[in-house]
Image (tube, rainbow, N blue to C red):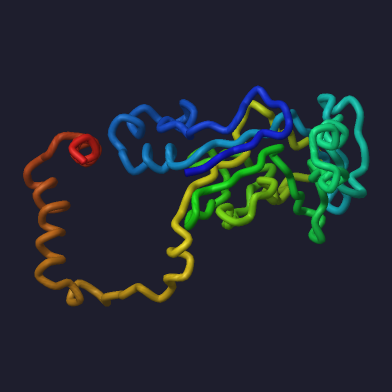
Length: 241
């Protein structure tokens, strides 16, 4: 379904996201809440190949890749150390000199464009939703902006935009923490807008709706079903399918 090319050496290549959100889900949520588990595991985690430190004063940004020992102003796009030379060494002649930048500043000075060092390509008809890691959105110093990439025909760098939210204090992006979760979606879904109906109030429920409500709500309450029954049923259906 998807092919990743890690152009920059990394200890953390793209990998399937975990049902436990890397061990951070509450134990009851992991055991009994199947929607939580499935959302956490849907797609792949993508990391940065190296640690990145940012310092933003509300207008200008400085960056560091040596644990904050040395800071440089972010004026133009910067490259991963040694990457441009390495790429040119292997690239055909007409592809030399086109190394994607590691970090670049957007028109909005609070927004940074960050490249993961990865290229991605999907099967025909599949696009990629690029977002922050599901159920790992604990960071308050920056947020990942979501986007959809037509990766079936656009074989390019897997970038993201992050919005800085903390000033005058270092913002640290660690390579061992996933920066992104990429999730495959059929391209056809992006053009199916308007296929939605809304019923108003309980009077809008028909007999089929009430039967479904009775099965999923009433019987579970009156029958005192066991904890996590939905998760058990979903797992049984998955194995049977």
